[in-house]
Length: 284
Image 1: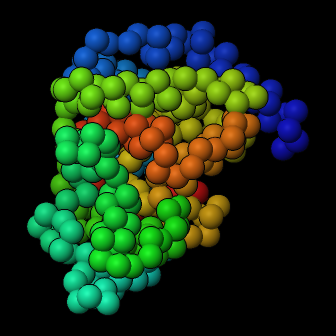
Image 2: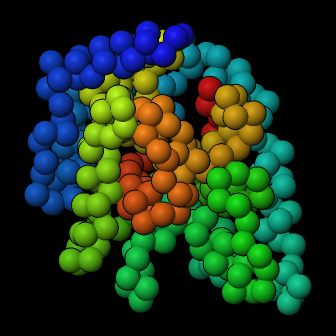
């Protein structure tokens, strides 16, 4: 599709969202109220779809897309990455320690608790961030943030959490709320030449077509990351996807693991609380 046609399609979606009444205009006063309103919006938009089914993205709301996806999942393209991640996770560093030494429960079955706010460090910590911190603390070089070995390790850790529900703690302290609000502001804030927000696509127009693709609901997005995308031909982290979304609205992407993206992941993940972890996943 030419750029002019793409812009018209995006503007049409934006207009549809405005005419339909943007959920982003109704800001609740607390994170708990936000979560309730967020879920309620999608329950009404997609009646009959269970909370956990939203973790399957487009495949939870479109039967035709689901058939193709289920066929792919019989021989998932991310299996090699899980095996690679497991091997890397269990391979000792030069000092003899492994990643297990850096995480509660040896790093097994804990994906659902990320990201979390660290009171000691006064910042939000993502899983990929802690993986790399584990490396540097043990005298190893940090890995690249968006794909490759880091995504493989993260995918293995996510795989060990399958079936456990997203459980990001409710922000309560002033600093936790500050991080949460920063993420919410990014989610609903418009940016780029196309002047669009995350919510314009994945809340207001969830379930609608843009070109040949259906826009997925934001509810449940984070549950299947890291994700294997056919477009990428490989695995990618949540922050790789954030950067791609920014580019699609013609906005300069931020650096992976920037405070802005960590805050966005914090808000985004809290909005998926109660949905089972099913990462890594496969998407178009």
